[in-house]
Length: 86
Image 1 (cartoon, one colour):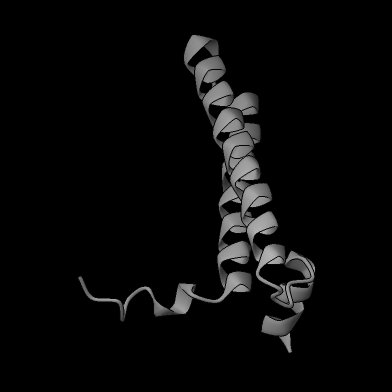
Image 2 (cartoon, rainbow, N blue to C red):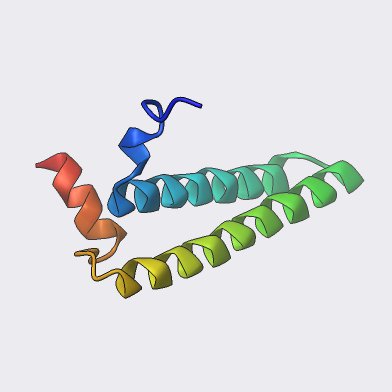
């Protein structure tokens, strides 16, 4: 298996930004589904999106604990986003 494609994800901050991006997209999907899809399909889709977002939140929490145990200089996702903007 080639590791060249996974090298951009080695940095803890990059993985954190991606995890937060996934959470944002799925939460927006939950809101849009809840507002615009009617009936049982809308309800089931809304609950599925919210549950997936909550699962990603738990993954991010565990991920953050692992990063602090390794003494990395992770200061939160907002600081990571500022690195990309500058």
